[in-house]
Length: 544
Image 1 (cartoon, one colour):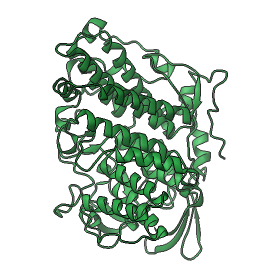
Image 2 (cartoon, rainbow, N blue to C red; image 1 turned 120 degrees about the horizontal axis):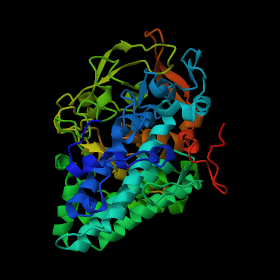
Image 3 (cartoon, helix red, strand yellow; image 1 turned 90 degrees about the vertical axis):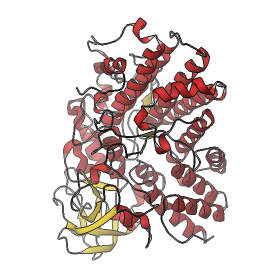
Image 4 (cartoon, one colour; image 1 turned 180 degrees about the vertical axis):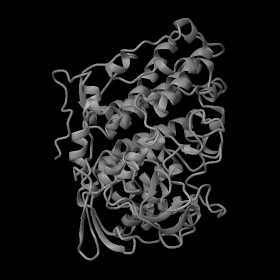
């Protein structure tokens, strides 16, 4: 196992922070530190830094890691971006190609191209391979494993910090560490509740239970942890000790650009953005109430602003946490031609850029058509590749930079996401002009170079918002949530650009029927060792 160069203590803790599965807990752990070594100020900070990043986001936190699939931000997020039709994959590792193959594609001439995989529907596939014997071959395993590993790490931090002796303002330092742990617990529960039909609430380290609860309860638990963090931060008055501790928790090479240490008020803004995300990504637009839209407005008005720091990761030459060449989904699209890397750029992503958008010109190059193996997919052929580091347009955002230290990977929320959630809430509460303004704000912020959107027509602004979320937030793991809540998973996409398997026909009026499962069943890798107790919520999505 590769050592992660954060602190000596955090290296020792790698194997101690495991996921909720009983088979993961039932291991020897000769490296677990004694309570005396962990319950010191430097020890608990080492634990709180190393255990979070390594167990939640790197291959060390995933027992069945596959290098092609990747870890969290370049693998799990990749699953989401494939199902959101931002990228696709030809590789068959962990059935990646199946995840990005729609049920069917109807071309301009009426030809219907079925999913060539067997089974030919993603729902059937996910059910067939959701068995413990698949181990890491089950795509539904990885997010569960990493997020419960993250939750367990945070639980360990909360337990140890109560026994820790701090110098200076002990209360401030302790509460900063606790707020940090509650942030990541909230994130872990948010990810579980936003993709699985049910989950576990577990607030003790190295233990689990069989009391599965509905996804809605998991989201409530996420919000409760965010609120605990906010309450602790709101009571802190010693900014020097707070900044010192948080500055030690965030790796130094992460603290550039937007990743600098936030003030307590800015930390709370990040929490508000994440709470708004919990609402918006888990509620179909057709089901949203006026009260929910107003709640999102309240949260985003108090959320991340354009000048606020966010929790951003970065790379270093050693690749201690994130490898410079493969730290994100976008980084794994880079290649010398349209075949790219592991992931291929979807023609539907490119289609959503408006004419003249400098973000397209700065980040993508058009190549000769690449045609993948027709027995692995029916929609992944593409002409586009991503440009590492951009094409040099001044003031225009760059999706990926594989030079060490230049990554700035958004690990949680961002200004763009916050402002576009605000735009959507404005749109659905009657402030169409305000929604257009928020969209314009993001285009200006990212250097799109587009004329200001001035329309107050509901349908026009709604379509611009849809496209802007796909373009501005591409590769950040939000596209699948949007497709789900907008009904695209069921109704499909019309007037889509699709390249026929001969590589010669560029269809512009194609129809895509995705048919993807909206919330995944609880992984059998968990259930095999931790069966549902009496009274548990359903562990399988009834959708067929």
